[in-house]
Amino acid sequence: TDFSSKGPRSMDGYLKPEISSPGSDIISAAMGGGSRVVKMSGTSMAAPNAAGVVALIKQSMKQRGLNLTALELKNVAMGTAKTISEKGVRYAVTRQGSGRIQADVAAEAQVVANEPSISFGEISVESKKSVRSKIEIKNLTKTDLNLSVVFEGNEFITMTAVSAFNLKSEGTQALNFVFNLDATKMTTETVREMDGWVKLMNGTVEVYRIPVLAVAHKLASISAQDLVVMS
Image 1 (tube, rainbow, N blue to C red):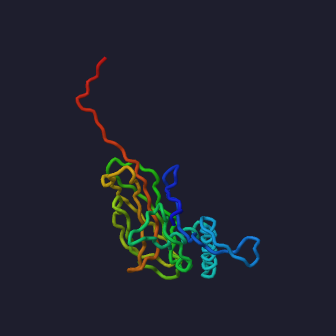
Image 2: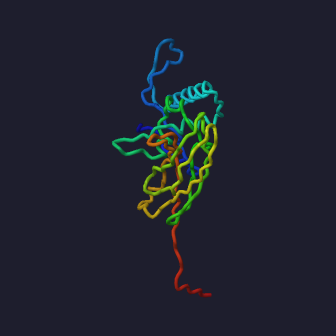
Image 3: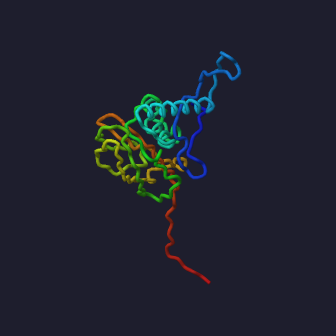
């Protein structure tokens, strides 16, 4: 919405918000109003919506015989979110986080990562730089999964190709990522965010996603020539 806050986190440039949830013109019970309802907007509506979805995820996982930690429940919600776009143009990760929360998809999640995001925060970049991250993926199903890895990002960040892999039933696989940051394409001081999503695919179907964010702290490159020291 036009009143949604935007990240990144001010103190260090790490990812915020982490996920989006419906929060505009939400109809809910009026406090102390008996059977009456009230329509409100804001995080006071979005937060309980997200909390309710996580409760449904937990219930679904227990019915599947899975006892996920609080962090894993959060990661499942983020990992199964849906990209928010307008007129074919996606919003920045710092506007939507991992995307819009999806209760139905999250309840049937096939995998979960050990981290909710790959967030590098403020990072010094003179021109180009490569940064690394390691994520573990756990299979929540009783069948092997053949997964490929793709990256969808803006023009300032790319990912070195990661090989497809077979994730064994209820097994865990570590993935090593290398992200290539290119600050030379940033033509204005107002553009600093390098963002996107690592996506795990089963054929053409997205199985899971991990949001990625680096906030460029651009450096100057100045050297002295014909230096004369006078005393």
